[in-house]
Length: 147
Ligand SMILES: O=C(CO)[C@H](O)[C@H](O)COP(=O)(O)O
Image 1 (cartoon, rainbow, N blue to C red):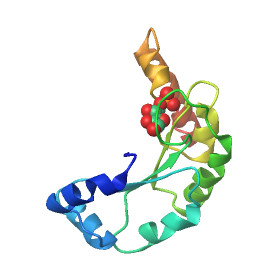
Image 2: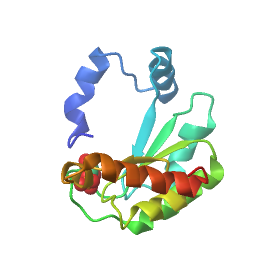
Image 3: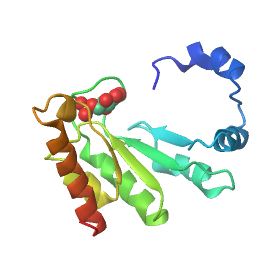
Image 4: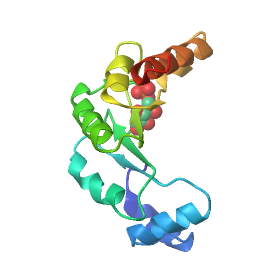
C-alpha cells in the first residue's frame, strides 16, 4: 500500500506494469505469482466483481478492516458484509482481512468467510507469537469446519 500512487506510476511502468487490468493479471500469472486486489473501507464490494468474473481474474481479495496507513487501529465490523458477500459469490476465493484482528475480532472475520488474516500488533506485541498465530488459525479452521 502506498500513500500517493502517482509517485509510483513511472517506476511501475518501467517495471512492466500496464494500465490494462487483464494484461497486468496475465503477466503476473505468467511469472507464477498470484495477483490480488485490496479494497479500502470506503470502496463498495461491487467494484471488485469485474476483476473476479472475467477470464483474467485476481486470485485474492483483501478487505481492509481499517483505513490503510498504520497498525493498531480499531477493527471495522461493518466490513464483514463485504467478506460475507464475497464468500457467498466465490466459495473458493482467497479472502484476506487486514486491520484490528485479534482474539475479539477473529471469529467475526472467520465466520464471515475470511481465510487469510493479516495481524500486526497482535503478533508483534505477543510474548508468544506462535501461540497467538495458532489461536487465529484455529478460529479460521473452526469456521471452515476443518478444525
Ligand atoms: O498496514 C496496515 C494498515 O495499513 C495493517 O492494518 C496493519 O499492518 C495490521 O496491523 P494491526 O494488526 O495492528 O491492525
